Picture 1 (cartoon, rainbow, N blue to C red):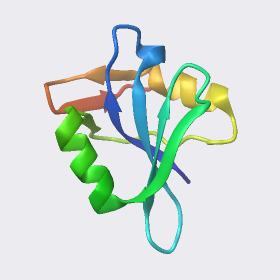
Picture 2: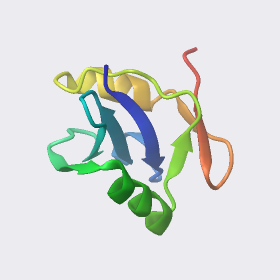
Picture 3: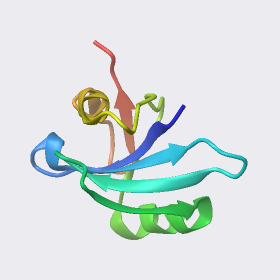
Length: 95
């Protein structure tokens, strides 16, 4: 199942940029921006996504939550439970 693996925090969490690792033979990463997630880029190969993470200072999510990319509410709910730990890491807190 797809997982939110990285996030670029904005002032309002629901307006943040996220990177979702997609299922497949070769993993790919889809970039999306909240809150409606109509702005999408990709999917891109993992090496391209990793370069983007570094360039734009995305935080890697230590325990990536699974999401249904066809359901906006699934993505939005998961995003609201991601908290920043440091400049480079974030953590999903289910409660």
